[in-house]
Length: 247
Ligand code: PGA
Image 1 (cartoon, rainbow, N blue to C red):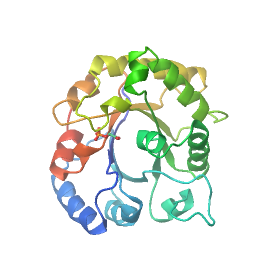
Image 2 (cartoon, rainbow, N blue to C red):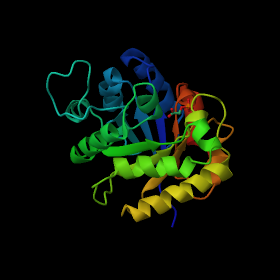
Image 3 (cartoon, protein in one colour):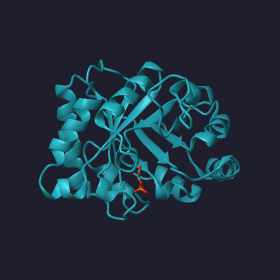
């Protein structure tokens, strides 16, 4: 059985509402939606509303938040709760992205609380995991990922609204992607860990880290890779449409 494929664009700190509108005007002109494929956009919080409005009623597309707070509301200056993101039109959220973990110092416990908030709020959670270069070189890739998955998914019931993104930290924004074979091997390991944690086998596992138009087809052809999470190469609408047409 083939799994549905998810193409997720992580715009990071780029594209304000006006730029997002111009981007989507172009993207929707060139993209050719295909059955079994969903294209998700993760704009900065200020642009969620405009992206969600432009994608409303188009079944192949989804809007999400790049990060959410653990709390539902309150005096938390600068933060975006699940409720706020959902009110702006988000149907999904990235959780535990490497920049949240390693630039902002988020712990496994915070990632867990955020994941719970997203699932309790009825959004699709894309849980990001991945090892740093030194951890890979020390042979600790799967140990790190097992720790990240077990901590984040502690007590989480088998949940349909979950996807995992394997994003080796050394591949993000570096132009150095994992080979399809390397990614596929880790994806197999992730699937076994998910199985042990009682997470359904149909949970999608995406690859992220320097995905480009010229390497995406090879990655999607590798066993166990159910989609991609893309930063830099998703910022140009034509390039992103090329990626979403691959494979
Ligand atoms: P990149 O980022 O495609 O620019 O490497 C991927 C990500 O951070 O999700």
